[in-house]
Image (cartoon, rainbow, N blue to C red; front, side, top):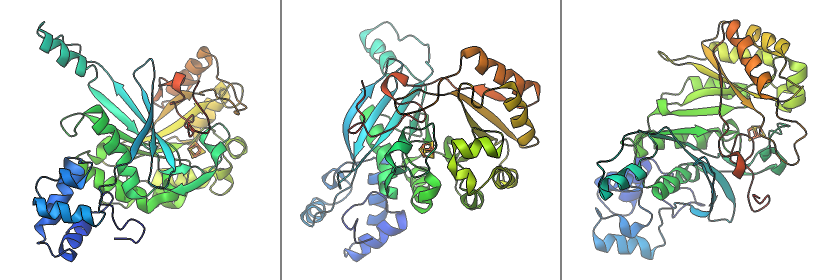
Length: 372
Ligand code: SF4
């Protein structure tokens, strides 16, 4: 275990937990018990690990061992069911994590009170958790509120997985029985914290029970890490936050483009080893009069021609301190139509939790930027 996190279980792999058990003078199967308790059952304290003998739990507690699930400091509930969580870590830093329930089974209960309760409890049939990978972000996309924070630090793998555990526990939800997707699209650029991010992916897949095909990571275009991701044995799907069809415009909106321009980025996208039926996602935030013209759409379709992918269109989520405006609805539809006519599948993403600043590009520490 690293010095800093010596007493925290969350973030350790099965192998590391087994080593820890053995170093503590325990048989190696205790490693499996710890792994299942921390990730499968998502216990919140060592005392709750019922598979361990009472005496051992006591001993672990005496030496200050903890599971390390972060605390929910605040919850903001949107009128559309989205919940924005402010999640705090042991050093006082915090990030935001968003819960987005979707769909409705539409099935009424049996009419009894109990049936109605079941119906109420399952007013969604799948949910997505949007996870942060850093406190703040260094990438400086000009349309993003998180960018205004700068980067404070990377999250550990345990802190990334911990956000998921805290939200699942709060929602009383357990994958894989419940359909939960993970998107690494919260605060931070996951590929600037690559090792911790990919370790978290492994723990979520193997430990928490969320299939890799249910996870998506979004990058602003850290090209070398796109190649690294393609070589991973267990990896999420890839989304690229594109937002402009040419270098001049993209460098203005996303300064990272000066380091890895569109030629390099699109080449990495073309080389990305897609699995059967997998598609790459290009995210495109539409800003009024900036990148939303039919000409921009035609340029975009040319740029990504031949890549097995789709474009997700997101009308800019407005926010204080952001210089751009949301385009009119007909501009968004026209952009979509132009892409579709050029043979590029394009989808308009419904904004979630706009009223609580939970939508794309709006995450920012609530303590510094209180929701109205
Ligand atoms: S859009 Fe993503 S990568 Fe860009 S500044 Fe915001 S959090 Fe960072």
